Image (cartoon, rainbow, N blue to C red; front, side, top):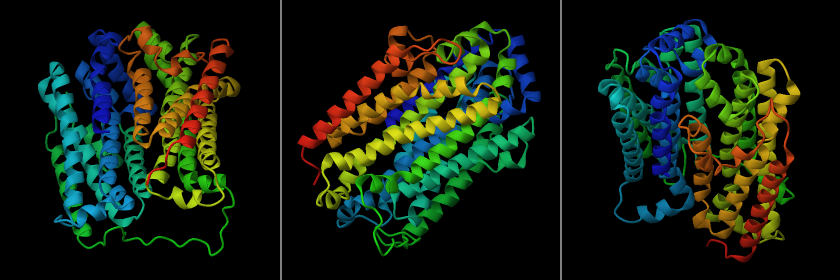
Length: 502
């Protein structure tokens, strides 16, 4: 998992200089972008203020906050995976029966997170050195600093919960809150000086001002936060019983209310579905409100028009921008369907599926419950994302909603691939993240790098009609839907005939 996260995040950052240099080829173009940010609060909320109109400064502005968020998500997943996940599965109890200290698992988890962030920082520093060595080092260290702040924060949260899923959800919510604080602060100020910005570790990365008269003392904030949170996590780990949490689990109802496999699947996944749905509704509204500001920023820049058209639309800049946003929502929603399908894998390897299947519940009915939530949940997520996008834009509900819903066949195809990998073997199931990650990487970075069309065609999203602004084309939609159904059927067939994990 670590190499994939480091590679995707690093390539996303390293793809920016060439893309931005081709879009804003002259100093006047870059100065115009910086000036535009002084009056465009919506774009400042999305990307932050511009502190330098050099290519390196625009890279830090355009991608810095998002690189920090990705580093934070990577770090929290690594820490929870090697602490609470291990305890929940029972593996940590076996390891701890040997000569292993109580705090050794936490040390190993934080060590893995530190190594991942160090490699990411090195990749960014070396890759951007041509834009300015000091700025490259600052951006790399700042990105790694955000990752380590949330690594130690996840270590604390993992001491309070008994569920790895809850630990990931709570820490992920804190990552989202940090981004929102940074966005609110930047919308209110033009230079990152808002108190709200300084309350967020993502805002610290911004105020490090990579490639723009770096403020090296900001790195001390990361160091202090990591030291304090790490010390708190170690203190809590030494006082907690293995497998337990400081927050007791709430007892369930005295009488059972789950009569079907689907009801159980919905009970287990409803929090994730509702969280993604509300997040997409808010994200869609935010993206929709940016439409006018983004088109004003692009202006007559043909290179930017070309990139946006390759990502989402071809008929008019506004339609192209809306199509791009719908496409990005679709590619990120692929992560949701993989997460939801792989809940089957989590239930199996933790042996929670065994007591369910020991009753009058067949494998197919058990799996169908979770797949119904996965595929139906992705449709709900995209529906609300489309409604939010149309509401934020204020026009064209039908075309905007269609642009979001037309992404569903590609999302379902990735869900079908995840089902096939899991059904074939539990060991292959994590590879589904690679499938979704590759589609996201191609869709996000491919157009900016002018990737060959043969490479872009590897993503199912490339074959969908570029709505809104172009006529609807049903053959690719029906082909992708049929392929998704075939992959899902093959996965269920394989699951039916293989042995379950013991």
